[in-house]
Amino acid sequence: MTRTFTASDGVKIAYYVDDFADPWKPSNALVMLHAAMGSAKRFYSMVPGFARYFHVVRLDTRGHGSSQVPPPDTAMNKQRVMEDVVEALDHLGIDRAHVLGASAGGYAAQQLAIHHPGRVKSLALFAATPGFKGEQGRRWLNMAAEQGMRKAFGDTIGERFPVGDCEQGLVDWFMDEICKNDLAWLARYVGYWTETDFMNEVEKIRCPTLIVKPGGEPIGLPSLYGEMKKRIKNSELVTYEGARHNVYDYLPERCVKDTLAFLGKHFPAELPR
Image (tube, rainbow, N blue to C red; front, side):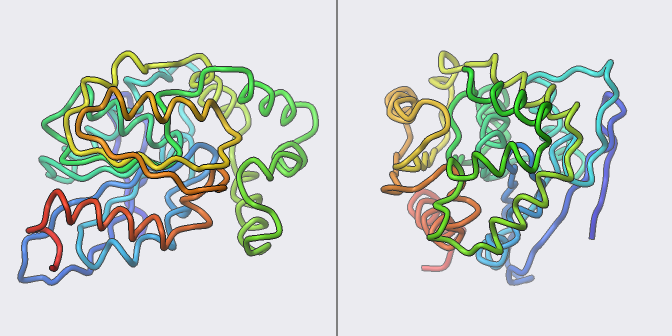
């Protein structure tokens, strides 16, 4: 069931709640933040593994999924997307949560841990470096404007999936979901991140942090993952050898398993032994 709240700038944000934890036990929250050009639906295959132990909250990032596409005069920056998460936590009465971010969702997750450390118990970052500064994202946007989203992202699908080694139905569904987006908003949203690098801030992250690097990462700079590990003191870097960027889409069971193992190590009371 889709639920919504209104952010402080008037934009409606959609969210979803799944909780199948034992009702007689305390339920800790896990907030999931999806990648750009997607929606909370992208986590469909990960939710069952998490919802057995956590109160799972999935947000549709502003301008994505069932959330409102913001008017042109509203701000689009790292502070605004972070504030959406803070305001969602306030709306739901959640003081602190574990936060999982995929790609651009991980940018917001990192910002939350940097600027509101008291709200974040842990981070799990999948293919999420500190921003996406560079020409690659701009190239996608230019191609999409000239050729249409389906052709532009279809031609670059190998950057996201190991085509031929994963289910074609998943790839087709992914393309259908991308093409539901408003291209003008994507130009603002993705375009902002292509100008943004906040590596100099990540040393402020103090919570336990899992960093998952796709070993065959073709998006962004793969060397940034190692730099994150150096700067985030309480962090663990795991490499998925040979993997493309979208590990959270095509390796969901592994992502869930590794996240639960990480949380079990740092928060043993929250998971069954």
